[in-house]
Length: 495
Image (cartoon, rainbow, N blue to C red; front, side, top):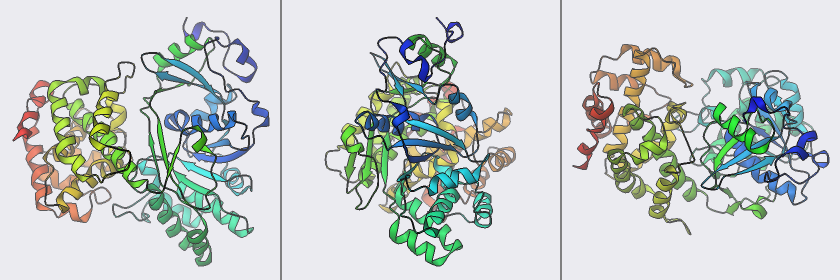
């Protein structure tokens, strides 16, 4: 049975019509109050933080419902509205399972009513604000500060009543609470940035300084910005997934979410935080998140990005097949062993070698069809955190990173191929990247044009001779090679 053949849509009223093996949320949603505002209700949030929160609500903690805020798009709001904001979590494993998630009570679209979002943030019942806005949403410079040249930040400083950025909304919400002498909410980043809480704290504080000095001091002294690490592979939903999930649950679900069974969340344990009791449902609270964060970011996300560009140039479209390709597998194993793991500090209870091996096993999951093109989205924002930091640490130790530099060169070639084939580039800096791609002629000067992206490459990297040499060598080595001719280059790095 396909989704079009099912007469009934998933909703509160139709819960009893679900197939008997579907796991229900098991609480009265009418009794749930909103205590969390979440920016970025995409697939990862709905497969991860919303699921942990759902588990908390099941335990009777009914004050932690979620108000999800989409900054620009109304798609999630409009699609889930007809389902009472319910959706299915499909766990993809050898033994798949399906669970209905009920923790999202409300979805707002910020562009439609900024005042409503700010009013929700200002409510005393809101104790926590969480974010999955991707790397680009933080509007940071390569050095980690707030980018005041970002057009959205420029706008928000003078239009705090109608922000365009998540940072602007955080400041607006906190400012409204400061004005009425209310306690602040806890702000929790759940994105793949090293020291994400510290970076977010700096961005919000620097913005607040532009509004009011006393307000900025209040933010700096009173607001908690814990760091966190999140982990669970969550491929994008497509029509095949919609059909399969709807058939499995017995009702139409217009936007289910799929995820691997493995999931992890580590949150920095700061005094005075206001967060749900997630520790009771599997979340780890730790005084030192940085080790977990760096290990996951550099291994899982770094290898994902490596597979994306190496795999795409090899003519492969998904993570599993790229991981199973003998030459690519050998390449990323050597990259992991020689260039990534040596930059990681030891973490109690976490062995980076064993973790790396487990990541490769997860990449091989036959139930997961994770498109490399999805991972390649917004690559200019991801690469600095996933790869360039690793390269910088190696250079600081007197070591080079030839394979990681090869991945950067492959990304540059990927951009050139997209432009040459008139394919759209899904990236926050698509205009700049398109202009560079149009100007490229295959020579070493192409590398210099890419390195001129100041918001991507730090001053130190742009001036590092070894880094430039390794990138240029790989860029010229790749040339116009694709497919098997491209993968034949990979053993070159066993030297």
